[in-house]
Image 1 (tube, rainbow over the protein chains, first blue to last red):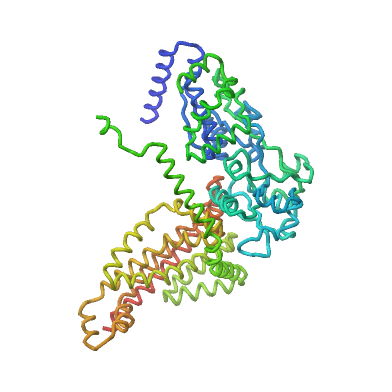
Image 2 (image 1 turned 90 degrees about the horizontal axis):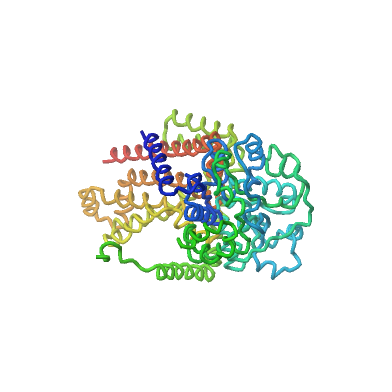
Length: 338
Length: 294
Protein backbone atom coordinates (compact mmCIF):
# COMPACT_ATOMS: atom_id res chain seq x y z
CA UNK A 1 0.00 0.00 0.00
CA UNK A 2 2.76 2.39 0.97
CA UNK A 3 4.59 1.41 -2.20
CA UNK A 4 1.45 2.12 -4.18
CA UNK A 5 0.98 5.53 -2.58
CA UNK A 6 4.63 6.33 -3.23
CA UNK A 7 4.36 5.37 -6.89
CA UNK A 8 1.21 7.41 -7.19
CA UNK A 9 2.92 10.37 -5.58
CA UNK A 10 5.87 10.00 -7.93
CA UNK A 11 3.63 9.89 -10.98
CA UNK A 12 1.71 12.87 -9.68
CA UNK A 13 4.92 14.77 -8.98
CA UNK A 14 6.30 13.93 -12.39
CA UNK A 15 3.02 14.90 -14.01
CA UNK A 16 2.83 18.26 -12.25
CA UNK A 17 6.47 18.97 -13.00
CA UNK A 18 5.95 18.37 -16.69
CA UNK A 19 2.69 20.21 -16.62
CA UNK A 20 3.98 23.31 -14.90
CA UNK A 21 7.40 23.35 -16.50
CA UNK A 22 7.23 22.47 -20.14
CA UNK A 23 10.91 23.33 -20.50
CA UNK A 24 12.69 20.15 -21.69
CA UNK A 25 15.64 20.49 -19.39
CA UNK A 26 13.51 20.73 -16.32
CA UNK A 27 11.23 17.92 -17.26
CA UNK A 28 14.26 15.68 -17.62
CA UNK A 29 15.50 16.61 -14.16
CA UNK A 30 12.79 14.95 -12.10
CA UNK A 31 13.35 13.64 -8.60
CA UNK A 32 16.80 13.73 -7.09
CA UNK A 33 17.90 12.44 -3.71
CA UNK A 34 21.03 14.01 -2.26
CA UNK A 35 22.97 12.44 0.57
CA UNK A 36 23.72 14.80 3.42
CA UNK A 37 26.66 13.38 5.35
CA UNK A 38 26.80 14.11 9.03
CA UNK A 39 29.65 16.63 8.99
CA UNK A 40 29.48 20.35 8.37
CA UNK A 41 31.07 20.83 4.93
CA UNK A 42 29.00 18.00 3.47
CA UNK A 43 25.84 19.44 5.01
CA UNK A 44 26.60 22.78 3.38
CA UNK A 45 27.32 21.16 0.00
CA UNK A 46 24.20 19.02 0.08
CA UNK A 47 22.05 22.05 0.86
CA UNK A 48 23.71 24.23 -1.79
CA UNK A 49 23.11 21.46 -4.33
CA UNK A 50 19.54 21.19 -3.18
CA UNK A 51 18.78 24.89 -3.51
CA UNK A 52 20.56 25.30 -6.86
CA UNK A 53 18.97 22.23 -8.42
CA UNK A 54 15.55 23.10 -7.05
CA UNK A 55 15.41 26.83 -7.66
CA UNK A 56 17.71 27.02 -10.66
CA UNK A 57 16.70 23.93 -12.56
CA UNK A 58 13.31 23.04 -11.12
CA UNK A 59 14.37 19.60 -9.93
CA UNK A 60 12.43 17.90 -7.20
CA UNK A 61 15.20 17.44 -4.64
CA UNK A 62 15.16 15.54 -1.41
CA UNK A 63 17.91 15.37 1.19
CA UNK A 64 18.59 12.09 2.97
CA UNK A 65 20.94 11.87 5.94
CA UNK A 66 23.98 9.63 5.56
CA UNK A 67 27.52 8.73 6.43
CA UNK A 68 30.45 7.58 4.31
CA UNK A 69 30.04 3.85 4.63
CA UNK A 70 26.24 3.50 4.79
CA UNK A 71 25.70 5.99 1.95
CA UNK A 72 28.32 4.40 -0.25
CA UNK A 73 26.91 0.92 0.36
CA UNK A 74 23.37 2.07 -0.28
CA UNK A 75 24.33 3.90 -3.49
CA UNK A 76 26.24 0.98 -4.88
CA UNK A 77 23.79 -1.73 -3.81
CA UNK A 78 20.41 0.00 -4.02
CA UNK A 79 21.14 2.87 -6.39
CA UNK A 80 19.85 5.39 -3.89
CA UNK A 81 20.54 8.22 -3.01
CA UNK A 82 21.48 9.65 -6.41
CA UNK A 83 24.24 12.03 -5.34
CA UNK A 84 26.94 11.94 -2.68
CA UNK A 85 28.26 15.52 -2.90
CA UNK A 86 31.29 14.98 -0.66
CA UNK A 87 32.52 11.40 -0.56
CA UNK A 88 35.93 10.83 1.01
CA UNK A 89 37.07 7.95 -1.11
CA UNK A 90 40.24 6.97 0.74
CA UNK A 91 38.13 4.81 2.98
CA UNK A 92 36.26 3.16 0.13
CA UNK A 93 38.84 3.26 -2.65
CA UNK A 94 38.71 -0.40 -3.69
CA UNK A 95 34.97 -0.99 -3.38
CA UNK A 96 34.45 2.28 -5.25
CA UNK A 97 36.71 1.10 -8.04
CA UNK A 98 34.73 -2.12 -8.23
CA UNK A 99 31.44 -0.23 -8.30
CA UNK A 100 32.72 2.03 -11.08
CA UNK A 101 34.09 -0.90 -13.09
CA UNK A 102 30.82 -2.76 -12.84
CA UNK A 103 28.95 0.34 -13.93
CA UNK A 104 26.98 1.09 -10.79
CA UNK A 105 28.60 4.37 -9.75
CA UNK A 106 30.34 7.28 -11.48
CA UNK A 107 32.67 10.01 -10.29
CA UNK A 108 31.32 13.25 -11.68
CA UNK A 109 33.58 15.73 -9.92
CA UNK A 110 37.13 14.85 -8.97
CA UNK A 111 37.75 17.87 -6.74
CA UNK A 112 34.57 19.47 -5.39
CA UNK A 113 36.60 21.33 -2.75
CA UNK A 114 40.11 22.65 -3.22
CA UNK A 115 42.86 22.77 -0.61
CA UNK A 116 41.66 19.95 1.54
CA UNK A 117 43.47 17.24 3.34
CA UNK A 118 43.62 14.66 6.04
CA UNK A 119 46.67 14.40 8.19
CA UNK A 120 48.25 14.92 11.56
CA UNK A 121 47.71 18.27 13.22
CA UNK A 122 48.90 20.19 16.26
CA UNK A 123 47.45 23.12 18.17
CA UNK A 124 48.99 26.51 17.24
CA UNK A 125 50.18 27.14 20.80
CA UNK A 126 52.38 24.05 20.53
CA UNK A 127 54.24 25.34 17.47
CA UNK A 128 54.65 28.73 19.14
CA UNK A 129 56.33 27.09 22.10
CA UNK A 130 58.39 24.68 20.01
CA UNK A 131 58.94 26.27 16.60
CA UNK A 132 61.63 23.75 15.66
CA UNK A 133 59.30 20.77 15.97
CA UNK A 134 57.63 21.51 12.68
CA UNK A 135 57.37 18.10 11.01
CA UNK A 136 55.65 14.88 11.96
CA UNK A 137 58.95 13.06 12.47
CA UNK A 138 60.34 15.74 14.79
CA UNK A 139 57.18 15.69 16.91
CA UNK A 140 57.29 11.89 17.02
CA UNK A 141 60.63 12.10 18.82
CA UNK A 142 59.07 14.07 21.69
CA UNK A 143 56.20 12.07 23.22
CA UNK A 144 57.00 13.72 26.56
CA UNK A 145 55.40 16.96 25.32
CA UNK A 146 51.97 15.32 24.97
CA UNK A 147 51.51 13.41 28.24
CA UNK A 148 48.72 10.85 28.21
CA UNK A 149 46.38 11.35 31.18
CA UNK A 150 46.16 7.65 31.99
CA UNK A 151 49.92 7.05 31.83
CA UNK A 152 52.06 10.17 32.12
CA UNK A 153 55.20 8.46 30.84
CA UNK A 154 53.60 8.03 27.41
CA UNK A 155 52.64 10.52 24.74
CA UNK A 156 49.03 10.68 23.57
CA UNK A 157 48.37 10.57 19.84
CA UNK A 158 44.67 11.15 19.29
CA UNK A 159 43.63 8.86 16.45
CA UNK A 160 40.41 8.42 14.61
CA UNK A 161 37.15 7.28 16.29
CA UNK A 162 36.35 3.57 16.29
CA UNK A 163 34.57 2.50 13.16
CA UNK A 164 35.57 5.42 10.95
CA UNK A 165 37.46 4.63 7.77
CA UNK A 166 40.45 6.66 8.95
CA UNK A 167 40.83 4.49 12.04
CA UNK A 168 42.58 1.78 10.04
CA UNK A 169 44.96 4.20 8.33
CA UNK A 170 45.91 5.81 11.62
CA UNK A 171 46.42 2.47 13.35
CA UNK A 172 48.62 1.18 10.53
CA UNK A 173 50.69 4.37 10.32
CA UNK A 174 51.07 4.15 14.10
CA UNK A 175 52.65 0.75 13.54
CA UNK A 176 54.63 1.85 10.48
CA UNK A 177 56.27 4.77 12.31
CA UNK A 178 56.99 2.47 15.29
CA UNK A 179 55.22 4.95 17.52
CA UNK A 180 54.62 2.42 20.30
CA UNK A 181 58.38 1.86 20.62
CA UNK A 182 58.89 5.63 20.62
CA UNK A 183 56.61 5.97 23.63
CA UNK A 184 53.25 6.89 22.11
CA UNK A 185 49.76 5.63 22.86
CA UNK A 186 47.16 5.60 20.12
CA UNK A 187 44.12 7.10 21.85
CA UNK A 188 40.68 6.29 20.50
CA UNK A 189 38.47 9.35 21.03
CA UNK A 190 35.36 7.17 20.67
CA UNK A 191 33.33 9.44 18.43
CA UNK A 192 33.50 12.57 16.31
CA UNK A 193 32.22 14.54 19.28
CA UNK A 194 34.97 13.09 21.44
CA UNK A 195 37.64 14.00 18.88
CA UNK A 196 36.34 17.56 18.53
CA UNK A 197 35.95 17.88 22.27
CA UNK A 198 39.55 16.90 22.88
CA UNK A 199 40.76 19.49 20.35
CA UNK A 200 38.49 22.23 21.70
CA UNK A 201 39.59 21.53 25.26
CA UNK A 202 43.31 21.63 24.38
CA UNK A 203 43.02 24.68 22.12
CA UNK A 204 40.91 26.64 24.63
CA UNK A 205 43.45 26.07 27.38
CA UNK A 206 46.58 26.44 25.24
CA UNK A 207 47.59 22.83 25.83
CA UNK A 208 49.56 20.67 23.40
CA UNK A 209 47.51 18.40 21.17
CA UNK A 210 48.70 16.03 18.49
CA UNK A 211 46.36 13.91 16.44
CA UNK A 212 44.39 13.17 13.34
CA UNK A 213 42.04 15.66 11.73
CA UNK A 214 41.07 16.95 8.33
CA UNK A 215 40.31 20.07 6.38
CA UNK A 216 37.98 21.79 5.49
CA UNK A 217 36.38 21.96 8.91
CA UNK A 218 35.19 24.63 11.27
CA UNK A 219 37.47 23.20 13.96
CA UNK A 220 40.56 23.84 11.83
CA UNK A 221 39.33 27.32 10.94
CA UNK A 222 38.27 28.19 14.46
CA UNK A 223 41.32 26.98 16.37
CA UNK A 224 43.87 27.53 13.58
CA UNK A 225 45.13 23.97 13.82
CA UNK A 226 48.33 23.40 11.88
CA UNK A 227 48.89 20.39 9.66
CA UNK A 228 52.39 18.99 10.06
CA UNK A 229 54.23 17.97 6.90
CA UNK A 230 55.81 14.51 6.74
CA UNK A 231 59.55 14.21 6.06
CA UNK A 232 58.96 10.67 4.89
CA UNK A 233 58.16 10.48 1.21
CA UNK A 234 55.00 8.97 -0.21
CA UNK A 235 55.68 5.25 -0.21
CA UNK A 236 53.56 4.41 -3.20
CA UNK A 237 49.93 3.59 -3.65
CA UNK A 238 50.57 -0.15 -3.30
CA UNK A 239 51.60 0.44 0.28
CA UNK A 240 48.71 2.81 0.94
CA UNK A 241 45.79 1.21 -0.86
CA UNK A 242 47.00 -2.36 -0.43
CA UNK A 243 47.96 -2.12 3.23
CA UNK A 244 47.56 1.15 5.17
CA UNK A 245 43.80 1.45 4.66
CA UNK A 246 43.16 -2.23 5.38
CA UNK A 247 42.46 -4.01 8.66
CA UNK A 248 45.54 -5.04 10.62
CA UNK A 249 45.32 -8.70 9.59
CA UNK A 250 45.51 -7.69 5.91
CA UNK A 251 48.44 -5.37 6.44
CA UNK A 252 51.32 -7.27 7.97
CA UNK A 253 54.10 -4.91 7.02
CA UNK A 254 53.02 -1.25 6.66
CA UNK A 255 55.75 1.11 5.44
CA UNK A 256 56.04 4.66 6.77
CA UNK A 257 54.55 7.06 4.30
CA UNK A 258 53.26 10.58 4.03
CA UNK A 259 49.48 10.84 4.16
CA UNK A 260 47.79 10.05 0.88
CA UNK A 261 46.58 13.01 -1.17
CA UNK A 262 43.09 13.56 0.03
CA UNK A 263 40.58 12.51 -2.40
CA UNK A 264 37.10 13.86 -2.18
CA UNK A 265 34.76 13.16 -5.02
CA UNK A 266 31.23 13.91 -5.95
CA UNK A 267 29.85 10.50 -6.77
CA UNK A 268 26.58 9.73 -8.53
CA UNK A 269 24.80 6.54 -9.45
CA UNK A 270 24.91 5.47 -13.09
CA UNK A 271 21.11 5.41 -13.15
CA UNK A 272 21.14 9.09 -12.25
CA UNK A 273 23.88 9.99 -14.72
CA UNK A 274 21.69 8.62 -17.51
CA UNK A 275 18.74 10.82 -16.59
CA UNK A 276 20.66 13.58 -14.82
CA UNK A 277 20.93 16.08 -17.67
CA UNK A 278 21.35 19.61 -16.35
CA UNK A 279 21.90 18.46 -12.79
CA UNK A 280 24.87 16.35 -13.84
CA UNK A 281 26.29 19.26 -15.83
CA UNK A 282 26.07 21.50 -12.77
CA UNK A 283 27.76 18.95 -10.51
CA UNK A 284 30.74 18.79 -12.90
CA UNK A 285 31.36 22.53 -12.52
CA UNK A 286 30.68 22.83 -8.83
CA UNK A 287 34.05 23.47 -7.11
CA UNK A 288 34.26 25.18 -3.72
CA UNK A 289 37.51 27.10 -3.10
CA UNK A 290 39.00 25.88 0.21
CA UNK A 291 39.18 29.29 1.91
CA UNK A 292 35.56 30.09 1.05
CA UNK A 293 34.54 26.72 2.43
CA UNK A 294 36.47 27.27 5.67
CA UNK A 295 34.97 30.73 6.16
CA UNK A 296 31.48 29.29 5.73
CA UNK A 297 32.24 26.55 8.24
CA UNK A 298 33.41 29.07 10.81
CA UNK A 299 30.18 31.01 10.16
CA UNK A 300 28.20 27.82 10.63
CA UNK A 301 29.93 27.10 13.90
CA UNK A 302 29.84 30.63 15.35
CA UNK A 303 26.22 31.26 14.47
CA UNK A 304 25.22 27.69 15.34
CA UNK A 305 23.60 27.61 11.93
CA UNK A 306 22.48 24.42 10.21
CA UNK A 307 23.34 23.31 6.68
CA UNK A 308 20.30 24.95 5.09
CA UNK A 309 20.91 28.34 6.75
CA UNK A 310 24.57 28.26 5.78
CA UNK A 311 23.73 27.34 2.20
CA UNK A 312 21.56 30.46 1.92
CA UNK A 313 24.33 32.54 3.53
CA UNK A 314 26.82 31.11 1.03
CA UNK A 315 24.55 31.81 -1.93
CA UNK A 316 23.98 35.42 -0.85
CA UNK A 317 27.55 36.14 0.20
CA UNK A 318 29.52 34.39 -2.55
CA UNK A 319 27.51 34.78 -5.73
CA UNK A 320 30.78 35.34 -7.61
CA UNK A 321 31.75 31.76 -6.77
CA UNK A 322 28.61 29.89 -7.66
CA UNK A 323 27.62 31.98 -10.66
CA UNK A 324 30.31 30.18 -12.64
CA UNK A 325 28.74 26.82 -11.91
CA UNK A 326 25.33 27.46 -13.42
CA UNK A 327 23.73 28.71 -16.60
CA UNK A 328 22.76 32.40 -16.83
CA UNK A 329 19.11 31.57 -16.76
CA UNK A 330 19.45 29.41 -13.67
CA UNK A 331 21.54 32.06 -11.93
CA UNK A 332 18.76 34.57 -12.40
CA UNK A 333 16.19 32.23 -10.90
CA UNK A 334 18.38 31.36 -7.95
CA UNK A 335 19.07 35.01 -7.20
CA UNK A 336 15.39 35.80 -7.40
CA UNK A 337 14.58 33.05 -4.93
CA UNK A 338 17.00 34.22 -2.23
CA UNK B 1 -4.18 37.74 14.77
CA UNK B 2 -0.50 37.19 14.07
CA UNK B 3 0.02 36.98 17.82
CA UNK B 4 -1.87 33.69 17.87
CA UNK B 5 -0.43 32.30 14.67
CA UNK B 6 3.17 32.57 15.63
CA UNK B 7 4.63 31.92 19.02
CA UNK B 8 6.09 35.15 20.44
CA UNK B 9 9.64 33.83 20.58
CA UNK B 10 12.95 35.55 21.09
CA UNK B 11 14.15 36.79 17.71
CA UNK B 12 16.94 35.01 15.88
CA UNK B 13 19.63 37.46 16.88
CA UNK B 14 18.64 37.47 20.52
CA UNK B 15 18.59 33.70 20.57
CA UNK B 16 22.04 33.50 19.03
CA UNK B 17 23.30 36.07 21.50
CA UNK B 18 21.92 34.02 24.38
CA UNK B 19 23.48 30.77 23.12
CA UNK B 20 26.79 32.44 22.47
CA UNK B 21 26.87 33.99 25.94
CA UNK B 22 26.25 30.63 27.55
CA UNK B 23 28.94 29.01 25.39
CA UNK B 24 31.47 31.72 26.16
CA UNK B 25 30.71 31.66 29.87
CA UNK B 26 31.29 27.95 29.88
CA UNK B 27 34.51 28.29 27.91
CA UNK B 28 35.82 30.86 30.39
CA UNK B 29 34.82 28.61 33.26
CA UNK B 30 36.63 25.66 31.72
CA UNK B 31 39.75 27.80 31.11
CA UNK B 32 39.68 29.01 34.69
CA UNK B 33 38.86 25.84 36.60
CA UNK B 34 39.35 22.99 34.13
CA UNK B 35 42.84 22.16 35.23
CA UNK B 36 41.97 22.30 38.94
CA UNK B 37 39.05 19.96 38.31
CA UNK B 38 41.27 17.58 36.40
CA UNK B 39 43.75 17.52 39.26
CA UNK B 40 40.91 16.94 41.70
CA UNK B 41 39.82 13.87 39.76
CA UNK B 42 43.35 12.59 39.24
CA UNK B 43 43.32 10.11 42.17
CA UNK B 44 40.09 8.67 40.77
CA UNK B 45 41.73 8.34 37.35
CA UNK B 46 44.74 6.56 38.83
CA UNK B 47 42.40 4.22 40.72
CA UNK B 48 40.47 3.43 37.53
CA UNK B 49 43.65 2.87 35.53
CA UNK B 50 45.04 0.64 38.30
CA UNK B 51 41.82 -1.37 38.57
CA UNK B 52 41.65 -1.91 34.82
CA UNK B 53 45.32 -2.94 34.64
CA UNK B 54 44.83 -5.31 37.55
CA UNK B 55 41.82 -6.99 35.95
CA UNK B 56 43.41 -7.26 32.53
CA UNK B 57 46.75 -8.54 33.81
CA UNK B 58 45.27 -10.98 36.34
CA UNK B 59 45.49 -14.58 35.05
CA UNK B 60 42.17 -15.56 33.54
CA UNK B 61 41.58 -18.63 35.76
CA UNK B 62 41.79 -16.35 38.81
CA UNK B 63 39.09 -14.09 37.38
CA UNK B 64 36.92 -17.06 36.48
CA UNK B 65 37.25 -18.45 40.02
CA UNK B 66 36.45 -15.01 41.45
CA UNK B 67 33.37 -14.79 39.25
CA UNK B 68 32.28 -18.21 40.47
CA UNK B 69 32.82 -17.22 44.11
CA UNK B 70 30.97 -13.95 43.61
CA UNK B 71 28.05 -15.76 42.02
CA UNK B 72 27.96 -18.37 44.81
CA UNK B 73 28.29 -15.82 47.60
CA UNK B 74 25.45 -13.78 46.17
CA UNK B 75 23.05 -16.36 44.87
CA UNK B 76 23.83 -19.73 46.58
CA UNK B 77 22.57 -21.30 43.38
CA UNK B 78 24.64 -23.82 41.45
CA UNK B 79 22.74 -23.00 38.32
CA UNK B 80 23.80 -19.34 38.40
CA UNK B 81 27.42 -20.19 39.28
CA UNK B 82 27.72 -22.57 36.34
CA UNK B 83 25.93 -20.12 34.05
CA UNK B 84 28.23 -17.23 34.91
CA UNK B 85 31.39 -19.32 34.57
CA UNK B 86 30.21 -20.64 31.22
CA UNK B 87 29.40 -17.18 29.89
CA UNK B 88 32.82 -15.85 30.95
CA UNK B 89 34.52 -18.80 29.27
CA UNK B 90 32.54 -18.13 26.09
CA UNK B 91 33.39 -14.42 26.22
CA UNK B 92 37.07 -15.28 26.57
CA UNK B 93 36.92 -17.88 23.83
CA UNK B 94 35.37 -15.38 21.43
CA UNK B 95 38.24 -12.94 22.04
CA UNK B 96 36.40 -10.35 24.10
CA UNK B 97 38.24 -10.94 27.36
CA UNK B 98 40.17 -7.65 27.56
CA UNK B 99 37.21 -5.50 26.58
CA UNK B 100 35.03 -7.32 29.08
CA UNK B 101 37.58 -6.79 31.85
CA UNK B 102 37.81 -3.08 30.99
CA UNK B 103 34.01 -2.83 31.08
CA UNK B 104 33.83 -4.74 34.37
CA UNK B 105 36.43 -2.41 35.88
CA UNK B 106 34.55 0.77 35.01
CA UNK B 107 31.16 -0.71 35.94
CA UNK B 108 32.44 -1.88 39.33
CA UNK B 109 34.00 1.50 40.04
CA UNK B 110 30.83 3.30 38.95
CA UNK B 111 28.66 1.04 41.09
CA UNK B 112 30.85 1.54 44.16
CA UNK B 113 30.80 5.31 43.70
CA UNK B 114 27.04 5.34 43.18
CA UNK B 115 26.49 3.25 46.31
CA UNK B 116 28.89 5.45 48.29
CA UNK B 117 27.12 8.64 47.24
CA UNK B 118 23.60 7.32 46.73
CA UNK B 119 22.88 5.59 50.02
CA UNK B 120 23.76 8.60 52.24
CA UNK B 121 21.67 10.87 50.01
CA UNK B 122 18.81 8.38 50.18
CA UNK B 123 19.05 8.28 53.98
CA UNK B 124 18.99 12.08 54.16
CA UNK B 125 15.98 12.16 51.87
CA UNK B 126 14.09 9.70 54.04
CA UNK B 127 14.96 11.72 57.13
CA UNK B 128 14.00 15.19 55.92
CA UNK B 129 11.03 15.83 53.65
CA UNK B 130 12.62 19.06 52.53
CA UNK B 131 15.69 17.24 51.23
CA UNK B 132 13.39 14.83 49.46
CA UNK B 133 11.49 17.55 47.66
CA UNK B 134 14.75 19.25 46.67
CA UNK B 135 16.55 16.13 45.46
CA UNK B 136 13.71 14.42 43.60
CA UNK B 137 13.60 16.89 40.66
CA UNK B 138 17.38 16.65 40.36
CA UNK B 139 17.09 12.88 40.09
CA UNK B 140 14.38 13.32 37.45
CA UNK B 141 16.72 15.53 35.43
CA UNK B 142 19.59 13.08 35.78
CA UNK B 143 17.48 10.22 34.50
CA UNK B 144 15.81 11.92 31.59
CA UNK B 145 18.29 14.42 30.17
CA UNK B 146 19.78 12.99 26.95
CA UNK B 147 23.29 11.86 27.77
CA UNK B 148 24.81 13.64 24.76
CA UNK B 149 23.80 16.94 26.29
CA UNK B 150 26.05 16.55 29.30
CA UNK B 151 28.76 14.65 27.43
CA UNK B 152 29.83 17.82 25.60
CA UNK B 153 30.48 19.97 28.70
CA UNK B 154 32.06 17.04 30.52
CA UNK B 155 34.51 16.54 27.65
CA UNK B 156 35.27 20.26 27.47
CA UNK B 157 36.11 20.24 31.17
CA UNK B 158 37.90 16.94 31.60
CA UNK B 159 38.86 15.84 28.10
CA UNK B 160 38.18 12.35 26.83
CA UNK B 161 38.83 9.19 28.76
CA UNK B 162 37.87 7.27 31.86
CA UNK B 163 36.93 10.02 34.33
CA UNK B 164 34.43 11.85 32.10
CA UNK B 165 33.09 8.44 31.06
CA UNK B 166 32.65 7.45 34.68
CA UNK B 167 30.88 10.73 35.45
CA UNK B 168 28.50 10.18 32.55
CA UNK B 169 27.74 6.67 33.77
CA UNK B 170 27.19 7.84 37.35
CA UNK B 171 24.86 10.66 36.35
CA UNK B 172 22.60 8.09 34.77
CA UNK B 173 23.06 5.22 37.24
CA UNK B 174 22.85 7.11 40.54
CA UNK B 175 19.09 7.87 40.76
CA UNK B 176 17.71 4.34 41.35
CA UNK B 177 19.87 3.66 44.39
CA UNK B 178 18.95 7.03 45.91
CA UNK B 179 15.26 6.58 45.24
CA UNK B 180 15.08 3.01 46.51
CA UNK B 181 17.12 3.73 49.65
CA UNK B 182 14.75 6.57 50.45
CA UNK B 183 11.70 4.46 49.68
CA UNK B 184 12.99 1.44 51.62
CA UNK B 185 13.59 3.43 54.79
CA UNK B 186 10.27 5.21 54.51
CA UNK B 187 8.46 1.90 54.14
CA UNK B 188 9.80 0.51 57.42
CA UNK B 189 6.89 -0.33 59.69
CA UNK B 190 5.91 2.51 62.07
CA UNK B 191 5.27 0.06 64.88
CA UNK B 192 8.75 -1.37 64.65
CA UNK B 193 10.12 2.14 64.93
CA UNK B 194 7.94 2.86 67.94
CA UNK B 195 9.19 -0.33 69.55
CA UNK B 196 12.81 0.70 68.98
CA UNK B 197 12.03 4.13 70.43
CA UNK B 198 10.44 2.47 73.44
CA UNK B 199 13.69 0.61 74.06
CA UNK B 200 15.40 3.97 74.11
CA UNK B 201 17.33 3.72 70.84
CA UNK B 202 19.06 6.90 69.73
CA UNK B 203 18.24 8.10 66.19
CA UNK B 204 21.58 6.76 64.95
CA UNK B 205 21.04 3.39 66.61
CA UNK B 206 17.56 3.27 65.18
CA UNK B 207 18.88 4.03 61.69
CA UNK B 208 21.72 1.51 61.73
CA UNK B 209 20.09 -1.18 63.79
CA UNK B 210 16.50 -1.08 62.55
CA UNK B 211 15.78 1.04 59.51
CA UNK B 212 18.69 0.11 57.24
CA UNK B 213 18.49 -3.65 57.89
CA UNK B 214 14.76 -3.64 57.24
CA UNK B 215 15.24 -1.53 54.13
CA UNK B 216 17.99 -3.76 52.75
CA UNK B 217 15.85 -5.66 50.23
CA UNK B 218 14.80 -2.34 48.69
CA UNK B 219 18.34 -0.97 48.84
CA UNK B 220 19.52 -4.08 47.02
CA UNK B 221 16.88 -3.61 44.37
CA UNK B 222 18.44 -0.14 43.98
CA UNK B 223 21.95 -1.55 43.68
CA UNK B 224 20.67 -3.99 41.10
CA UNK B 225 19.06 -1.21 39.06
CA UNK B 226 22.18 0.94 39.35
CA UNK B 227 24.33 -1.84 37.92
CA UNK B 228 21.88 -2.41 35.07
CA UNK B 229 21.81 1.27 34.18
CA UNK B 230 25.59 1.52 34.37
CA UNK B 231 25.86 -1.38 31.93
CA UNK B 232 23.41 0.23 29.57
CA UNK B 233 25.69 3.29 29.49
CA UNK B 234 28.73 1.31 28.37
CA UNK B 235 28.27 2.20 24.71
CA UNK B 236 27.63 5.88 25.40
CA UNK B 237 30.71 6.08 27.60
CA UNK B 238 32.75 4.58 24.78
CA UNK B 239 31.80 7.55 22.63
CA UNK B 240 34.13 9.64 24.76
CA UNK B 241 36.97 7.18 24.66
CA UNK B 242 36.28 4.74 27.49
CA UNK B 243 37.79 1.35 26.67
CA UNK B 244 35.58 -1.69 26.82
CA UNK B 245 32.82 -3.54 25.03
CA UNK B 246 31.27 -0.30 23.78
CA UNK B 247 34.11 0.41 21.32
CA UNK B 248 33.56 -2.67 19.14
CA UNK B 249 29.82 -1.98 19.27
CA UNK B 250 30.38 1.53 17.93
CA UNK B 251 32.74 0.13 15.33
CA UNK B 252 30.13 -2.39 14.29
CA UNK B 253 27.39 0.22 14.08
CA UNK B 254 29.28 2.50 11.72
CA UNK B 255 30.57 -0.32 9.51
CA UNK B 256 27.61 -2.68 9.60
CA UNK B 257 29.67 -5.54 11.05
CA UNK B 258 26.74 -7.66 12.13
CA UNK B 259 28.63 -10.41 13.93
CA UNK B 260 30.97 -8.07 15.80
CA UNK B 261 28.09 -5.95 17.06
CA UNK B 262 26.02 -8.93 18.05
CA UNK B 263 28.85 -10.67 19.92
CA UNK B 264 29.85 -7.63 21.94
CA UNK B 265 26.25 -6.65 22.54
CA UNK B 266 25.53 -10.13 23.87
CA UNK B 267 28.61 -9.94 26.10
CA UNK B 268 27.13 -6.81 27.69
CA UNK B 269 23.83 -8.66 28.10
CA UNK B 270 25.61 -11.62 29.70
CA UNK B 271 27.30 -9.33 32.24
CA UNK B 272 23.96 -7.68 32.95
CA UNK B 273 22.15 -10.97 33.50
CA UNK B 274 24.87 -12.31 35.81
CA UNK B 275 24.89 -9.16 37.92
CA UNK B 276 21.11 -9.03 37.94
CA UNK B 277 20.51 -12.63 39.02
CA UNK B 278 23.21 -12.52 41.67
CA UNK B 279 22.11 -9.27 43.28
CA UNK B 280 18.43 -10.20 43.04
CA UNK B 281 19.02 -13.51 44.80
CA UNK B 282 21.07 -11.71 47.42
CA UNK B 283 18.24 -9.24 47.97
CA UNK B 284 15.71 -12.06 48.28
CA UNK B 285 17.86 -13.91 50.78
CA UNK B 286 18.25 -10.78 52.86
CA UNK B 287 14.49 -10.38 52.84
CA UNK B 288 14.03 -13.95 54.10
CA UNK B 289 16.51 -13.44 56.91
CA UNK B 290 14.72 -10.23 57.79
CA UNK B 291 11.45 -12.14 58.04
CA UNK B 292 13.04 -14.75 60.29
CA UNK B 293 14.33 -12.15 62.71
CA UNK B 294 10.88 -10.93 63.60
